[in-house]
Image (cartoon, rainbow, N blue to C red):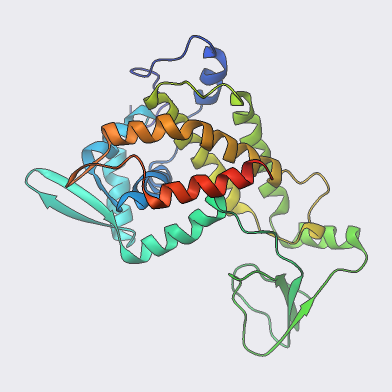
Length: 293
């Protein structure tokens, strides 16, 4: 089998909530390349950026991803400039490149320390930017949410606020950005993981980490599909905030067992990885704010 479902063995399913946990895990195996990115982003990046290939193979096997798929995915990530490898004796270690470390930090902030919703809009006049986040306003203008990460083109650029016509604005936003796709992804995350609320505090370490990685992986896909528009442009039943609070609560509940499991079973060339670092502590502090927002 090259790509299958989640493997419960050798995980010990808790007797108190077996149906709920099993429901969350009863999904096809994730795509190897994307899931490896999830592992590096959550576990490896804040702990030095390097991981032994043997650890990666073992972790992915629990999630139904075969060794051959792991090796193929790692080769692709190396070819794409995201990872680079070292061989020490008979063991191979792969670390984040300098460029991918910066990218991981930028993307990770979106779900570990999410920024506030943008206030207002940028309007470019006389040209139509082709960079991400911009939508056309006829042939000679474009509009984008006023966020710090939006590329601002040269030429006439203005700031705008919404004063009226919210229904028209929401209709335009739905036609111009993937609002419905992001909402669907957020709702799918909530539907899958909401059953775990208040039931994960005492799970075994390997199972806690597996659930955390699954939650991060699915939530990450939802966040990356989110156009991050001003609140006025979003539907009144927008699920993004509920998904963010659920993700934060689950992460915080799973963190103690997950981080202890990392310190037992994840290794780089120097030995096992640390359970906590300044970066992981900062993530928990930020997520605590999101969980109660």
